[in-house]
Length: 458
Ligand code: 9WN
Image (cartoon, rainbow, N blue to C red; front, side):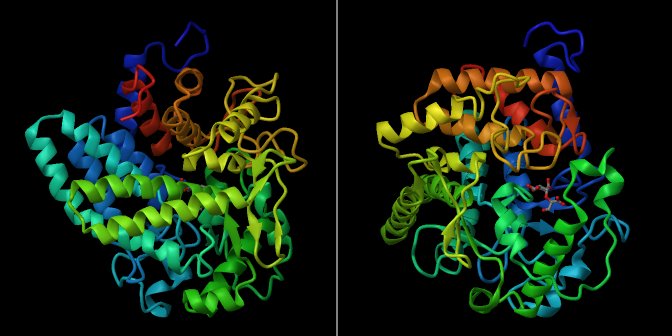
């Protein structure tokens, strides 16, 4: 980290201490709020990234983040995208547990804790393996405790991945179908614009947005029209009683999400290592290998040679989604690439369309390419950089053996956080922090980056 008068943190030690403090403040006892005001519940993929950072502080607490989340797993194997905190006052976040009504409508939902009825990308096995590898270096006690938790977590992770490989991919394409942009985690990226525009919004029960109370400028959040559509999809899911077979027949938004699918491939790789550690039966290990290989083939089939990116596929429209977003680098996350495809992806990643854009404040990939017609520099998922997503690409680059490239990304990412603090997302040209402050996963990835001072991945 170099000298800059406007830095929030002067030294790496200051940055690490404050990251630990953010996670401590957001720790509600065995689980961590995604952010103190805007997101007062436990979010699925946030918790996985949080666990990755917590592993650098306390591997037992890191595992607990995952086991708390998996305590809310549905009977189908689905890990819900939100586990609601029963202790926050009504009106703290919308849509709340009452609006989702999962306990009343879905036979597979747990009665407690209450959850949302959709999921998010499966980073959890990646987090579990990461914690395990750190625990192994922390001495016999930490290793023994981590091994015991892994043995308990493994069947839950397997059920989660099985759900994604079957209910979310009935055709065996290797790609995961999402029912809602919230499932992608990249909520209002231009990736979803066309599919969302085709959703006919019916008569919605009234609602009040809470999110806008927690950001300085509503332009940083999705629009009211987007919210109506999000809420309408929730009503459609309720009408199908959250039943996957019914949803596949009737739901107006069914898109094969390449980034979600690539994370599942990488997570299957991690799950395979966990399966070996807990001495899972050979047949299960072979099943995991088959999911991983099917996922890689599915992603290869969605490669668009003209754009040099991997594209989502809209099942309702029967067409690929031709947008320029970081999701296009999904095969990098999935790994196992031939050299020419890896080179093509690295070239596109560093090109002026993404991390090589000359006007960027830091050479970090914007969520949407500035060349895409849907790009908006300050708007949620339409352009800002998201530190946790930078971490995912850093991790993928290191796994692909692109160590120098990974190290440059890590340094730029730490410079960004040192300058702006633990913002949810960052305007890519000016470096203005946007969204929530003290976002847990931003603090978590900062801790992991600081610990990986040789660019290495745990
Ligand atoms: C809806 C918690 C979550 C992240 C998502 C991010 C945002 C929620 C929202 O916040 O989504 O799930 O209310 O906007 O898009 O990736 O998990 O940090």
